[in-house]
Length: 93
Image (tube, rainbow, N blue to C red; front, side):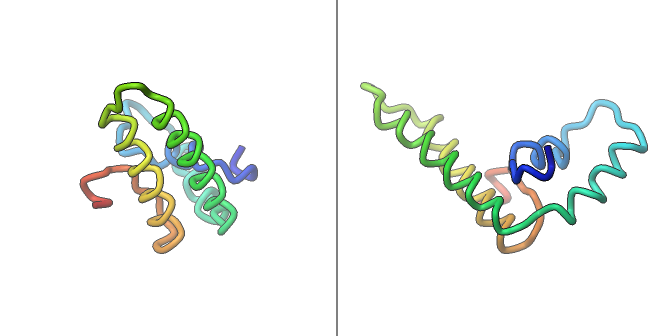
């Protein structure tokens, strides 16, 4: 899954919200950092575009989907600039 350039997998792997972990988790994180490429940007751009289309189709626009698009784009930008996953909108902003 790491080789498919899927940002969702990286976000799950590097999430700070961990209930329990094993040594294999740290090993996967170590491996995953070397799997990050510029191709991950396509995941975030595509995902944001899909979410934006869904937002536009709403009759009553809600803020939550719009914030989701914003968060996805900022996460992708941060990943491409810094090379690390950050999904916290407060930190990204």
